[in-house]
Amino acid sequence: MLLASNTKKQMATCKACGKDFISFRPLAQVCSISCAKKHVASQKKEEKQKFKARKEKVKPRSKWMQEAQSEFNRYIRLRDRGLPCISCDRDNKSKQNAGHFLSTGARPELRFDERNVHKQCEHCNSYLSGNQAAYRIRLIKRIGLELVEWLEGPHEPNKHTIDDLRQIKETYRAKAKELENQWDQTTKSAPPSGPGLTQEPD
Ligand SMILES: [Zn+2]
Ligand SMILES: [Zn+2]
Image (cartoon, rainbow, N blue to C red):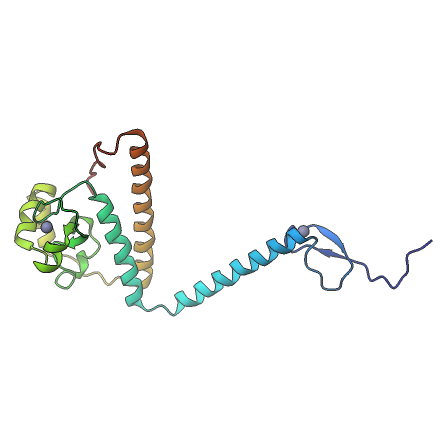
């Protein structure tokens, strides 16, 4: 009562769960339908990661710069969420920007310095080109004259390599997430009209 020898049975290792199974089909890679689904999903994920890595390899520095700036600016807007515009003191509901005190063109080395960037309304940021004189007055109130003068003083040039920009992007994405989590906890434990986030000095 032996099995017919033409039944091509062989042992194989499932690519999804790693268990050995009896394969009735040559080249079978998975042991079950649920493992087949898992296997397809993980292959898709792998493809996506490879694609992302290939894309990052050819991503120009300017794109890294843009992405790092966007994460940094988002963090600044979250950090200053409870504060009015740094230049006009208005707490208007219009679009809020992260405004540089000393511009990125004039002082590129302060582009990602948290003391140099604060929440600013669209009016001051775009239409008044940063409203700098008024910015300075309120910046002194916020961080002190000493730090403002330090910002205005000489600084080492900073070349921001792609690796630096990648690091900045990741750091500020994480810092923004942390603020959002804190915010979630505050809003859960206090009424929405309660105090906003407390400012921590840089
Ligand atoms: Zn399996
Ligand atoms: Zn303003």
